[in-house]
Amino acid sequence: MKIALLTIGDELLSGVTVNTNAAWLGNQLMEHGFPVDECVTVGDETSRIRRSLKYLWESHELVIVTGGLGPTRDDVTPRAVAEFFHSKLVFHEPTFDSLKQRLTSRGIEITEQHKQQSMVPEKAEILANDSGTAPVLHFRQDGRELFCLPGVPYEMKHLVQSLILPMLEQKQAVKYVTRLIRTAGVPESTLFHQVEDIIHHLPDGTVAFLPHIYGVDIRLILDESAAQKYQLPAVVKDIRERLGSVVYTDREETLPAVVGNLLRERELTLATVESCTGGLLADEITNIPGSSDYFLEGVVTYSNPSKIQRLGVPEELLREHGAVSEQVARAMTEGIRRSSGADTALATTGIAGPTGGTSTKPVGLVFIGYAIGETVNVRRFEFGGDRELNKARAVYAALNLLRLELKNTD
Image (cartoon, rainbow, N blue to C red; front, top):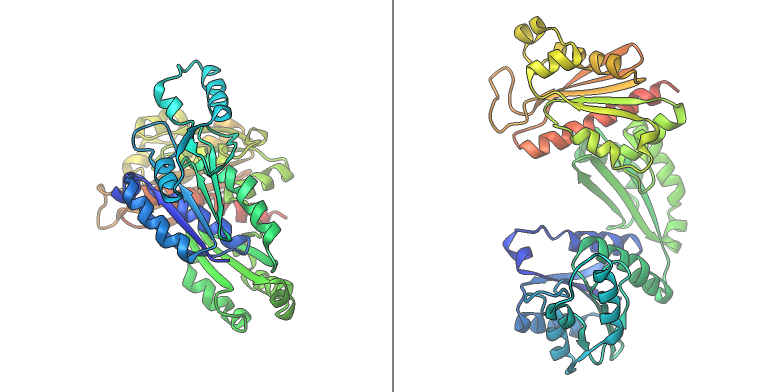
């Protein structure tokens, strides 16, 4: 099946909003054995949308459209799609009733713009959106299908998982097998070199190395017959054994979730203290449901006086070595573990940038302290020049250090 994506929005073209919808859709469809053939992005202008629809509709069996379904003036997708299918717009009472109920329950007054949101193409099948206000528009014609989804990411994701993927899987003649191996702490080129001899015999396009801020995913996708022919389970097993502790999961779970599960299994608690990461580490930890089982507290000691008063870091240590140093990272780790009573601890101190670096302490230099019980270790990292990337990389490096330390206690 040839599949195309059409993402709509001026903000996507200007760069004000990153087009995460296209990336997520492509990934999800690929995982389920439906690779996207083409993706087009256009602004909020009906003639451009119609032109793109014509091009994609003529050469694909399925077109998925996201964006432009809301109540504001730039939400022009229904009108553009109606014109493309030569369909007039009609008022859809069930959509309006659902919209009115959702908004009035939140104390929001119904306006004329909300009524306009209930105008839909007469030829469309209207599918309810139980996670938002804009309905899904579904068209079938000449053996092809088109879905118009809202551009709000959490709404779009829910609708793809609950409507689009089940529909595709019912039609799928060939079943695909997907395997995921998630790694941390080793760059993509090194991983490929380490497993090249294991995967060299697999067909082109079946193995992808996908680098992220937090590590590199290795994703293998083969149809059922190919998976059997090339003995996919054995391949995955060989890769995992070759990479060892670099692999932190073979499931769709994040590094913070893996660390949380290790803490929970061992009945250990965790506390964090952050300087350069400014609370991002605690945020990642507490994004995991149930993290209160093991996470006691997260403290941000951004200034030297805060490090002294809150953690008991000796003033002379800061004066002699500076806040960004192995010695201070160690003292911060010991201080938060002692004051919180946690079984384990993480600490970050560094120069996030873009300013503040020196010849001996460049931008991107980060010291991470990690402790289990009385044992405290510190690692030095040099990440680079981008402030946000440095903070994110420091967070995931800290989590990975704790993961490895916890695994070593087995």
